[in-house]
Length: 288
Image (tube, rainbow, N blue to C red; front, side, top):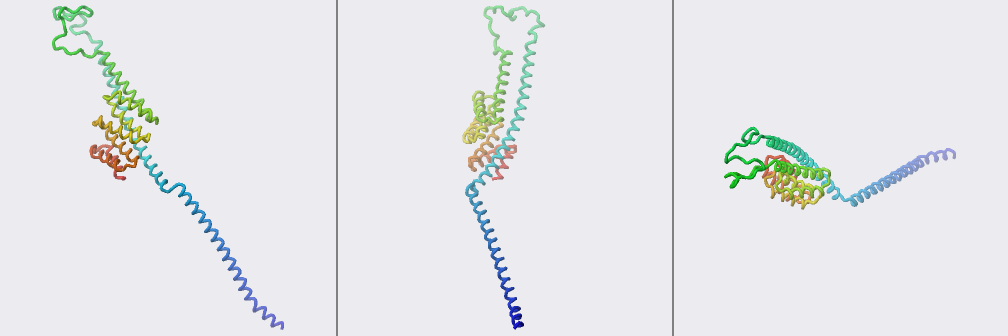
């Protein structure tokens, strides 16, 4: 009996071991399934958050913002190039202006100190054709010499002309300083006022150009295009015309009018080949 009982116990051991192994495997499977469920829930939650983020901000809006940033950077780069060029031109004009004024003043000083004609300060020659002394009455029947033209401008007239040139330059520089400081609204008013007050000034085309550029900086693209077109029509031979067309192209791009921008760029390339502005226009056309 004892031997039989021992044999029975030995036979039951494998069955119990198998039962224990099955329970362990089942427990591990349950643990693994729970971990998978937790991981799946976490992934679903992250996907939901991402979907909510995309829906809230809008993927299209994000792409549009990126494009807007690229456009703004290109605009700022172009404005920086134009400002650099304009500064160089303004410095050159200022040097030329001062040289011209110095030359005029030297001529005036030389003319005022010159001795009177007809001798070294001696009395005028006698005779019927002698010029009367200052302050003496003119002889009867005397008049201006035959064929004589209007008297040459005196020192005061020349100084007045030089003063006008200096005043124009100061007014222009003041408006340009407003633009550089970012006060675009004031710059528009100052430049437009300058162009109206001095339509024949050499600075008038540049004043109208910068008025349009300031309007563009204010996002008033339609007004900027109108101002630049007016400048081109009024001063078609100005060196600022290519830059004005480039500004018009930028305005059209800002308005999402790609056809208008392309027309302006193609006009630059066709009418002003070989210029720096034409090279910029070609670069923009190649990027479209």
